[in-house]
Every structure is written in C-alpha cells, then in structure tokens.
Image (cartoon, rainbow, N blue to C red):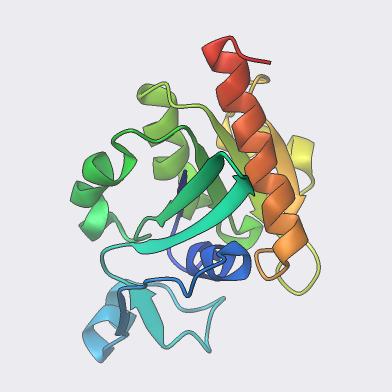
Length: 176
C-alpha cells in the first residue's frame, strides 16, 4: 500500500502511527535551501522531510501482511514514485485542506495509472478547512473514489483509512 500526498501532509506520521514495526524512514533535515523551496507556512515546526520513502507494515490477519510505503511529497522526488508503487494494491492520498494544491499531483498520479485509491483529509488541529464534498470538488475526484476525514496521528483512524483502500482494491479486482 502506498501512502502519498504533498509535502508535510502527514505521510510519515501515518506510517508511524499504524506500523507494527519501527518504521524505516529516510528523513533529512530541512536546510535553508529546502526551506526556500518547500512552503513551511502551515508546518512551521517541521524540521525534517522524507527524501526517499517511509516503510512500515501491519498484519491484517494471520495470512495477510500489508507493507506500507510512504512517498516523498516534493515534486523533485517524484521520479521515485513509479518504483515505489510497483505491485501496490492501492494508495492512500493524504491531503492537508489548508494546502489543497500540494495534492493534485498525487491524485492525478493514481488516477492516470488506474491504481485503486482513497483520499484522506488529514484533520490538522482536529479540523479540516473544507468538508468532504468541497474537497472532492476542489480535487476533481470522481464519485467512485472515497474521500474521508482522518487523523494521521491516531492508529485507529489510519487503520480505518487503509481499510477503505483495501475495499477499493478488492472491489476493483472483483473480490468481495
């Protein structure tokens, strides 16, 4: 399962919240140069950023282990996405509704590759700036793509979001 979205939307946090192993992260310090490129307006306490991927896993049942791959959020690392999504059952696109523009690329990526996915509006400070219908319209997401609100810091919330993606993948594959 691929967890993607723009810079600073909560991908690393989501992987860390749900993974049953200590997540492997490729975090690097945000330098002055990167701070000039990456918009830190809504994430002023952010000091690191993913430069390759995050990796974690969760056991769904005794016969099914789900591997989680978090993508880097900046466009300059987009060349890695094709390798990261190879063989993925689906994707979770995390959106910060304060910065919707940062997530268009991730939505487009999954739509164009016809990978089952869901959009998760991350509730920063316990709220989202736009409701599900407004976000669906702004992101131009088709009606068959689930759009949900979740909190990347809460294990149960991340679990529920991943289950929505798994349901999408099963429905697409003809499973039940």
